[in-house]
Amino acid sequence: MAPMSVGQPFRLPEELRSEHGKITRLSWLSVVLLVVAATLLFFTLGQSQAMKTAWVSDVLTAIPPIALLVAMRYELREPSKRFPNGYSRAVSVAFLVTASMLSLIGLYLLYDSLTKLIRREHPPIGTIELFGHQLWLGWAMVGSLFFSMCVGIVLGKLKAPVAEKLHSKAVQAEAEMNQAEWMSEGAAIVGILLVAFGFWWGDSAAAAFISVEIIRDGWHNVRQVIGDLMDESPTKLGKRDLEELPEKVRDAARRLPWVADAGTRLREHGHAVTGEVFVVPRSGAGMDAAQLVRAADGATKELEGLDWRLHGIVVVPVSALESSIPPRVGETDGAQR
Image (tube, rainbow, N blue to C red):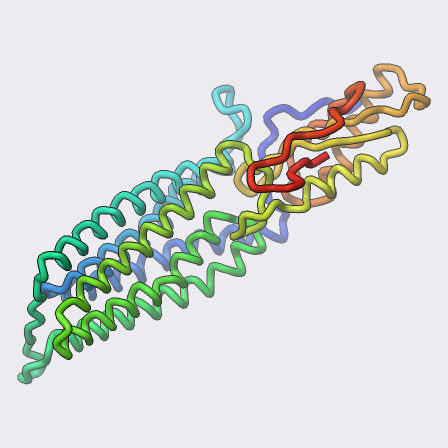
C-alpha cells in the first residue's frame, strides 16, 4: 500500500519549467522598461495633469512585476509545519496588496483631476531648448507617451502566451494591464493636443480617464484575487467563467469500475488545482477497508494524471452524496457534482 503524501510540494512539468523561467526574465524586463518610460515621462511632466497621472500609472504598472519577482521566491518552496499546504498563494497575496494600492491611488488621482476640472485650472505647457532651438514641451510629452505606449503593448504581447501556458492569472493580469496602456497614454496625448488647440479642459479630462482606467485595473485584480483566496472554483484564464476541469475530474472518477457516483470540490492554489473528490463505492464491489484504501490511492494517481495542474487531490469514499449542491452566485448550474 502506497503511503499518502502529506506536504509534497507542487512541481511544474519539465516541459513548462523553461516557461516559468521566462516569467522571471519578463518581469525584470518589465521593471527596466517601465522605469525608463517613467523616467522619460518625469522629465517631460511640466504642469500637465494628464502627464502626471500617466507618470503615476507607469510607476504603478512597475509594482506588479516587482511583487511577482518577490512572490516567486516563495511560491515553489517546500511546505513547512506552519504552512503545510505550501506557499503557492504567495503570488495571490502579493497581487492583493498591489491591486489594492492601484485602486486607492486611482481614486485619489480621479479626485485630483476632477477638482482641477471643476476649478477650471488652465495647465501651462511651456517650451524647452533643444540643440539651440525652442521646442514646445508638448511635443516632448507626446514622444515620451508614445514610447511608454509601445513598451506596454510589447510587454503585454510577450507575457500573454506565457500566462496561457502556465495558467498564471497573475501574469495574465499583468499582460492585460500592459496592453491597456495604449488607452491611458493615448488619452494623455489627446489631452495635450487639445490644450495646444485651446481646449484647456482636455488635460484634466484625460487625467480623469486615466484615473478611471487605473481604478478599473485595480478592482478587476482585487476581485480576482479575493475569489482565489476564498477558494472559488477554478475559473478560465482572464475570465469569470468556471473551468471545466472539475467536471472532467468528476466524470473520470465516475468511470472507475468500483465507483457508483462521484462529486468534486476543487480550488486553485497558484498554478496548482487541489481539492477533494468524493466517491460512493458500488454496493457490490465487495471491498474491505484495506482494499478501499488501495483503490482510493490508485484513483488519486489516475485523476492527478488528467491535467498537470492537479496536485494534492484527495479521494474520499463516502456513503452517499447530496442530491443537489446550492448554485454559486451568478451561476445557474454552479454544482460540480
